[in-house]
Length: 473
Image (cartoon, rainbow, N blue to C red; front, side, top):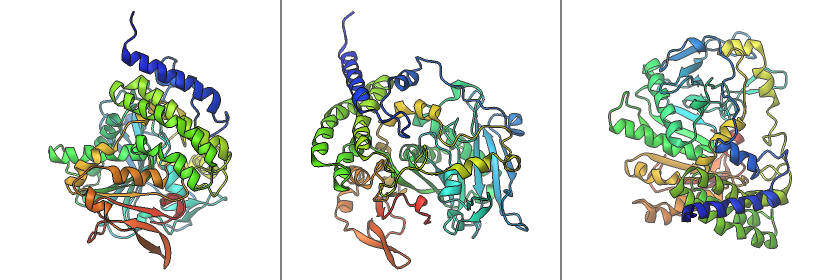
């Protein structure tokens, strides 16, 4: 049989992958995945994958498809005498699936009921939003004695905030059927849209509040797709109208073709690599660009190949920087995820906590390898393409990134924002940077069109790592 041009291109990419994997793989215990053949095979469903079901939560098995089971929660570890805080935890039984259930927390505002409703999506892909609840922008942090301490910068001070474990298989979300595994943004955004419809029926008092979608890292993929799904649902009068006002992406991966090319420039500017390293690693950029282009036309297998080819750029840098924390290059990595989340694992191992939030014996997975692998065919796709239509329809956009984050660095984010084609592109390009202050000290730089508060097309680059991890609302 003759070899087609597309097949020949794919075989070439796979050959490049094999070379990259052999020479540039991170150490086996490194937390960022290297280009490994087994993962390619698993992602192409050529080996049996791990089942996504992990048992049944208390009562979650009784939820009918399309229904929500929610309880008011007072978490163990709070000081005695704390009353009803308006905190909720629940499961949503996803319709149009075989057995998928989505876990979430909902924290009513410490301020006013009229405060905006915000949904937070942690990236990964496959990392639990409970990481944000207890380590970033949620109401509490966990002390070493397992008591809960109020987070004075928690976003619940100014919003009614939802934290969702998604896609299925993340955190406490689960299914007993592998067919419920999500591989693309269409599946992810439809699940989230269905959840919101039922959530607002459960909480009609919040339907008219302003609604914002927020998140970090791989949520740079989730958020544009999800925002587009909500906006289109509103325009088509599907179900409950969701009062979408805007979205914010922190240290996100949105346009890989642009952002991967920024790795070496950022690393050189930050003195993480030398000029000779820069020149050598940049030789991977043309194959990466070709692979991403092929991914955009050929789909699954070529997208996996693009992931492996392009990550040879990042892996090469990490081989040189060693144990530095790629979320904050001023620090060294602690643990598998570069931060110590052991208190969270202990907290969710407490039977009283599990009973309070209704998860039964479900295994908590802080970051799921299975979900990560399942989404690799989505990784190299460009999600910037859906943002201009949202901007034109008046949806506000905020892109922010900390200056010390390597993996989704500010430079790559700035470049895709400035290259995005929309009616305000030229005016935005003329916008001068301005300093913004926190507690009377410069906290970063901001670019925004004049005369707006949550501006269309704004971007800011805070000092430090990502904003929520720095503990600022």
